[in-house]
Image (cartoon, rainbow, N blue to C red; front, side):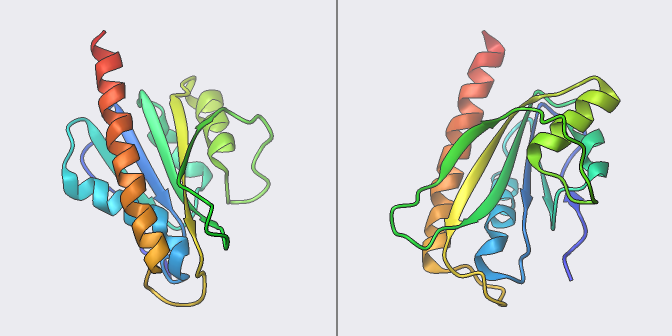
Amino acid sequence: MNAPATESSSQTAGILFIGYGNELRGDDGAGRRLVDRIESQKWDNVDTLSVGQLTPDLAARLANRSLVVFADALAAPGPRATVQVDPVKPVSSPARSHHCTPGTLLALAERLYRAAPVAAVITIPGQCFDWNENLSGRASANVQIALNAAEKMIQAWQVESID
């Protein structure tokens, strides 16, 4: 059973990182491990949220954000797969179940709250998605790479906000 959604600090800070995935399926929990690491850094103006999956009720948490970064694992058996940071745009097709994608969640926030923050997704490659609570060595290394990318993203965002 997944742990309930937890969010640090307030819901109105500028930046929100949302890590999602099943922590009982090995590397599938890499996005959640990334936000745990971000939370431990206690960066100014940065909040974190760790969830088992993206659901429509999360749209309200995006409404007052200037930047939202989603973090998820990717099954990538080959050694060439690397951590990716890609922009996310609202996708107007409605969620057909209780599960959303980052794009449908942004579209829902835009529709309901007239606010769609700038958004990105950090994809963390992994190789072992079997039933276990541990990340593989590869996924662990990729979480560190993703943490470095997140830090650079935050620094760049804060510099842009000052300008």
